[in-house]
Image (cartoon, rainbow, N blue to C red; front, side, top):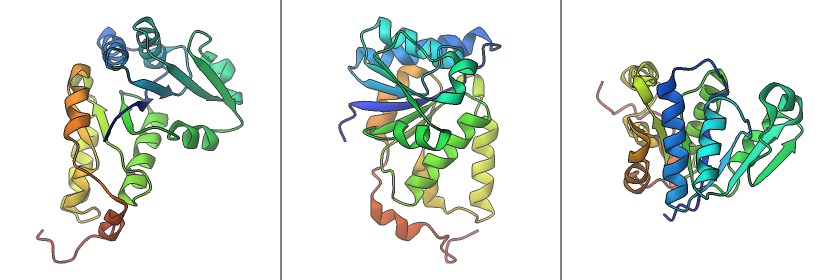
Length: 200
């Protein structure tokens, strides 16, 4: 699969350790240097802003999508290629996956968790087929990964669903993760239910 544009999920919080902001900047720069365009939540603060600023500085096309009611809270980024204001969160999330071939999730809070779980569910059901990559800065997603593994052990998810996402520790590993992601097709919908024959 040729990756021309990715969706990036990320926190807007400004109260973060420097390591998280550094990783976000490095991701933006890494994607830009590969000529990959970016869709993201349109914010100018936190990891969103750090990623977008670094990507723009390195020559990427960066498109933000933000719901109108958040324009005061997250301060829509005025220095990116385009900023689209949409009526609500539902529209924002749908637009962020339009024309995107992959999703990359930097650390974030409940909004990022929601987005990650939604795109995992869409992929599980064959509605989104691209790679999903978690950038596990400082082991941030370790607890989530343990929880997902537990859901497989308890048979709420199938072993095959562990192929839904890839995890990287450093932003510079993103290209390898995108290129080596297991292929996913709409036919995987047939594997949405847990197979009772799978060993416990």
